[in-house]
Length: 484
Image (cartoon, rainbow, N blue to C red; front, side, top):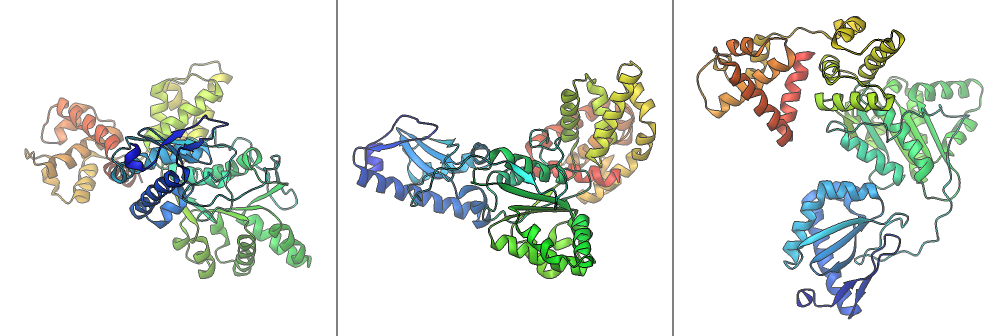
């Protein structure tokens, strides 16, 4: 091992989460390890691309090597967990390719250290961090924050995990290169506002900068009204100074500025002033910057130059997780069948989903009744009726056949070629999910197949959804197209 590295290294004792590098030949050993790490970093950057590397991997630092294990460090636990999950295998394989003697890579965090020391880069000398200062929403400028909307209460799943990760990164390190502005977009009720509030609350406990941190959160509509009132009262200078004096500006539902040219102009100049001053901008909208037609081209370009993260429509699994979490926090025992029923029936909006559960729980408490499927049908009849779109098996077969470019007759044929069998299984799966038909009924629509064939198809598609993200997105897309 020492011959491979051209040095003798050992890892010293841990102090406050720090890894201390020791070398019997500091100059030669440090140089050899630095060169290897530099080549690994270059290959890592080439593998993932400049934007992704700068976003997640630039702060990875080399701490040392112990036997056949390399230790890498990151400044926060969240970054450590994300890098481990998303890039751990890649980093390990690149190290092994660079040095076959390396058998494993340990990725750790160094809380409280800021940017981790890196042997491949000079380490700046910094003053000790000042005491944490609370985030104070500017009452004269901003809307109040909702105490329910924190990172702890946000349920993470595949459709929203990237947006969640970006929001956590901004909360831990505001105005980071690549994350300013942070632009969150998605449909109604998918969690954009929740994440924006969570960022502000997290800053109140995690921000390590000195002095008071001021956060201004408001809707685009309130921004417009504040600007109009400033024009009327001839106090635009005070308005500008108030907004440009904050550390973090958060604007919700930016799409409401479309068609408001003067307000857009003011926001554009405010945006530039804050970014130039190293302050953080967080914006949400219902569409990506490039799709916000009617927004000034200069503003649209600036919004797209930071980090853009979308929140997809919820999956069945995520809706179940949301309902389970909500019921657990409320201390209410809700039968699994009821949760599954709600998750299948209310698919478009998390707010409506949570509202339906709250309504069901409140009714049960008020009348001292158990929560059952029958009670759900009775109490939520109006909500369910609005979401009760009848989907036929024939409609499912046609949509799936069109999607996979096969003839609809193949759904009932005896052919077992994979390009036919897999779409047929998907159609059976969707028929089970979206209709009330029994397994024998479904089988009869697919060439009089036995109910066990339908069971196998449902089981196989469920398994593939868990194994293949692209396949899962395909099935979810088909389901949404059929439900809408």
